[in-house]
Image (cartoon, rainbow, N blue to C red; front, side):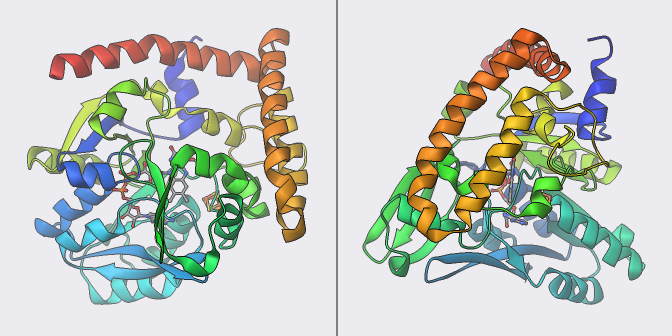
Length: 374
Ligand SMILES: Cc1cc2nc3c(=O)[nH]c(=O)nc-3n(C[C@H](O)[C@H](O)[C@H](O)COP(=O)(O)OP(=O)(O)OC[C@H]3O[C@@H](n4cnc5c(N)ncnc54)[C@H](O)[C@@H]3O)c2cc1C
Ligand code: SF4
């Protein structure tokens, strides 16, 4: 690869630096989706009067249906209750965000990429662009509200018993904890997500979306999937941070100097997860033009077809028992398709192989750096 920086920029959008970071407070770190950086940074911003209000979604559960309702938080210590990722639709964003814009001076908000676009437009409309600071997670999709119903059936939990769901937390990659009237059920987060829950229970808007890395945020946040996992499992989590604005860098450094987070610079190649490549690839089952950098490979075509058939099953509750078998079969076929891409040398196969090789070589440098930190 002649110019990794140019390639990385074409895949993740503009950035000035990439860090691996974690909350110094062990409780926040372990409760967070990846390393608790969003919670710790928002807490710093409120406690040091860098912002006057934080806008985040609060989880609601109604007979096994899970969704979020947007709310305003003004006390730093309250933020811990909002830790973790909410893998469900959220409601009332425009109303609550607009209210915050009118009532408060400076506002921080956490938002997936499509909500970031809405937030930036609304702030511009009110002449308040400079007042808004955005923490934006990477986003492969947001599952439908009833996706949890499917997962509850799949893991033999009664929907009527469910009190709350914590999709991430308890270390990294952590657990999905389902609190019921009879007690708590904990399922490994990757197992929960990969049960079909994260693969077929989202709509066409997410299928065609290409803004995976949240290019409009001040800081984009992601799981450190591309790094060797052992140090982060031991630590209880870490968040990959892509810095996109001067304000983002300033707040991040301030929070680090104030002892809320630990920051370590890493090679930007780690910001290119497999999901980034998948989202930047041309679709054959949909006409997608913006944000496309790569031609399809055997893997991506098969993955698209698997989504289309899997989605048809997901929309019929009677077909849910079939879905986990279907998904397992698809997993095998996808592994095979990747081998074909790499073996035949399709452009897709060459790019993913090149990027994984770079990550694996540079991953050892990060492990050494963390070891020397003690
Ligand atoms: C729907 C969704 C899909 C994601 N997909 C990917 C992915 O494909 N790859 C990847 O690497 N990372 C993905 N992430 C990001 C990842 O899960 C973590 O959110 C991110 O690494 C930050 O972790 P943290 O521990 O620093 O945040 P935490 O300290 O846990 O704080 C998370 C903050 O985000 C807020 N939040 C949670 N859910 C939402 C939501 N739905 N909308 C707006 N704000 C929310 C919380 O209120 C909290 O303030 C996704 C996140 C979400 C919400
Ligand atoms: S995948 Fe795209 S459209 Fe779907 S929730 Fe994420 S940002 Fe929004």
